[in-house]
Image 1 (cartoon, rainbow, N blue to C red):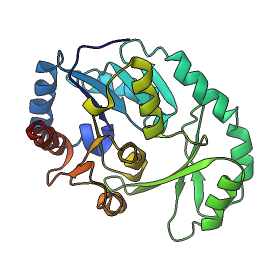
Image 2 (cartoon, rainbow, N blue to C red):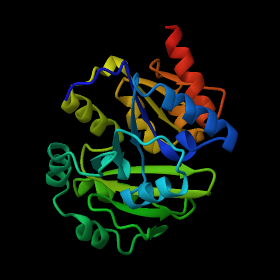
Image 3 (spheres, rainbow, N blue to C red):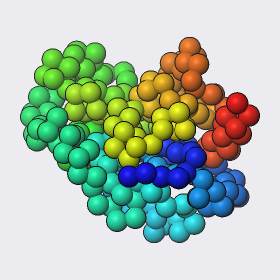
Image 4 (tube, helix red, strand yellow):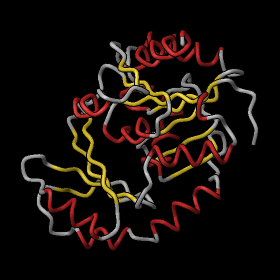
Length: 248
């Protein structure tokens, strides 16, 4: 798959592409729509596909992406049809190996965590309480052959604990995706605001962290020369970052 676009924008949704006032979002979304011959849009989000479909119904003016990397990097689909990109989805499925019940049993009596109501195919998602959550819980998951991601949504005041397939998260999946569609990594810009976006920035691709980013993410990116930390939140932060990179 070859594209004539000069830029691929790989952006998180909540707090990032969905961040800002109605007017700010309307102006930025119009800018993106006006640039669609130049910008290839990819959502890279923690949301599951049902919540993305619901978003399209709720916000008809939001730009539809060419592709969606959902479920924190474990679901990869075409943006229009929601059909999976089979070579990438198979990679995730084989790595995970139907481990949902194994993980739930492993963590059944762990303190400080609560299973989320979502039930994605290739990860297990919990809320966690920082005061009672135990580091040994993370170690138990790692010892069992999985990865973990801790993140915090400042808007909703939720702490998230995701158990992930080994070696799979937003960043690694995006890199595999770029290779699959034969798109130049140097022409790719990533955007995010929480620790589940850290792996996007760890790819070494150009990055934009918006000003409303989770403090722990801000701490992590301080030494990352590939990440621009915008003084603006949400879509204004993305727009600001795009302007900064256009100057380079």
